[in-house]
Length: 298
Ligand SMILES: *[C@@H]1O[C@H](CO)[C@@H](O)[C@H](O)[C@H]1NC(C)=O
Ligand SMILES: *[C@@H]1O[C@H](CO)[C@@H](O)[C@H](O)[C@H]1NC(C)=O
Ligand SMILES: *[C@@H]1O[C@H](CO)[C@@H](O)[C@H](O)[C@H]1NC(C)=O
Ligand SMILES: *[C@@H]1O[C@H](CO)[C@@H](O)[C@H](O)[C@H]1NC(C)=O
Image (cartoon, rainbow, N blue to C red; front, side):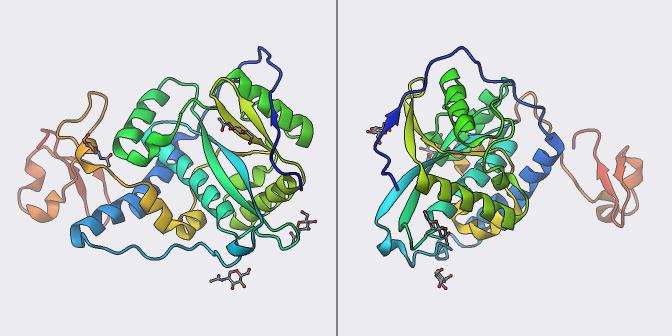
């Protein structure tokens, strides 16, 4: 194992970052919804029911930490997309990968290495990333630590190429990357991706300086481009709740933005069994309970 002493400067070139691929907005929407459902809503609810709630101990298995003889800094490059909800899902997964690497779960008694992981963000090419980043930083103060453009520069494209030359994958940024199993929905595959990553990092490791963003990226690095999934969500639920602490006073507004829609759902059929149909309410979904929309904005 070589200690991470060397800083490599990538050769400069004119290769720009490739345009981001079309994102699966529906999946993103579902991911955001799940995120709201399992993380943010319970958090808000906990605040309402018990302000003095004591957080449960975290899942980290730190059994072997005292035996670690060296901690290797590694970078998780995190590809974002869409607006606040999508960003939450993507960042949630990157943070989960970070906590997993740092947990000691990948401790190996042969090399006795530990890992400290840093998340480096790469925003999408569409300019709505600006709005997504602003909303995220306004609502979740812990996201203020990030430079959302850290990996959006030619220097990062060069670092990507260096990894491609060492370990294969695709030479185009955002295309197939080494250790891509970490983007799986299957927990076993994620473990196998992380396992091959730490195995590679314990054999060859360097810090590459990105002069554009003035930060080091580890070689090898991980490239995470997927939304959070339930196994990771369950495993790091407490950490996620703490990290995505919600700033109610700066996030909850009385007025919606001009491009936002506010839906107010009410079960008028049950509340007003005689007159619900005479007010011009529009039928949206017919299921066991009828959901009606008040078209007059009431
Ligand atoms: C922690 O990891 C060690 C070694 O892998 C294992 O023996 C132990 O059961 C784990 N503890 C918990 C609480 O998971
Ligand atoms: C531990 O790391 C060494 C070299 O770094 C590797 O050869 C070995 O397979 C690893 N052991 C496990 C159980 O992953
Ligand atoms: C980059 O890594 C080198 C070697 O570990 C270190 O000396 C330097 O301070 C780091 N620079 C930044 C900006 O983190
Ligand atoms: C939450 O937002 C308010 C209003 O913008 C701000 O004054 C406060 O410092 C924020 N709190 C945190 C923890 O960032």
